[in-house]
Length: 162
Image (cartoon, rainbow, N blue to C red):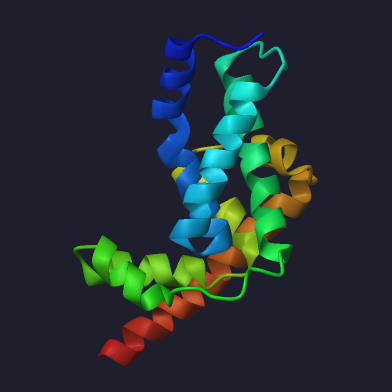
């Protein structure tokens, strides 16, 4: 029993960009992120799971996206990537936006995903902990350490620019 085409198209339009951003922040590669989004949406389409709310759908999609990212990152095929500096220059109009993006992308993966979910997706610490199957204190610590690393990196970049 598959879902109606219109309902699926609505889910795709609502979540594809969000899922891409999460996948890109995790894998640092646009092609992999595109593949992951397609895989996740196909899994959703084929899913026999009953979703109770829109939040339930969103959380499921994000969880599956993160799991698919993990699969890609451990794949033996994951050897070639495009340097982030080349990609960031094409996406952002202002140097500050590019610098922030590159600083976030240079964080370890465990910090990148919590930063993305917290600042870009507006999830609370509690919600992030549920999605990532981590303790709330772990998420809080990761956010704190990520902020500290970003502050140091951006301060260095700002000092170098002077």
